[in-house]
Length: 246
Ligand code: NI
Image (tube, rainbow, N blue to C red; front, side):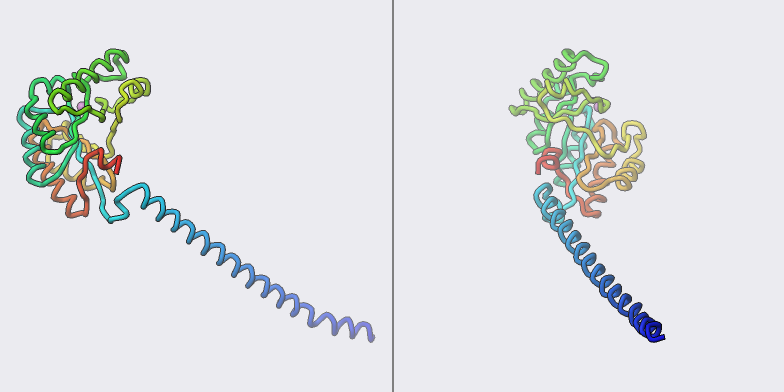
């Protein structure tokens, strides 16, 4: 009876004590977890700030950059119209030129260079490098570099392969920086300024390279509208070199 009572008496406070300890333990776990979560968030934020400030200028000064690029020129009519738009809007773009067109219109290439645009190589005759021997492709690239050098007196460092073909072996041999693109409005196919502008405005994001061709009146019209609209969206126009090597 006594033992039973004692045992009974002893049993009653025990669950309360256990519950109290459990509550304390739970509170401690919550506190520790909160501290761990807070610490990891803080560290992540610190890492993001360090990375962004060291790798891109954009987040530091709040600028969103975008690069306009034009392939296949110079065109005898529309390249100068594109240059007029760029001059009026005070924008520098990047032109990937075909050697055989450089040969025909050197004065347009000179103007591009004099006005501060970046000039790149797009092979001599727009060959598909994936279907050409490495030697022949390299000849096309070298010949075009020489032609551009004769006009601008500066070595050509930038290359864009026609059709976006990739070739590791040729890339190594050219010792140039190969450039692709992020936004392709298919301006050569649609030849419609509204469609070009809408595609770019809808798909563009920070640090994108936009692909167009300075060979169509629709592209000339679209170029001016894109500059105006993207500026309203907070974008700053830079060359591919400025974008990739800030
Ligand atoms: Ni092309």
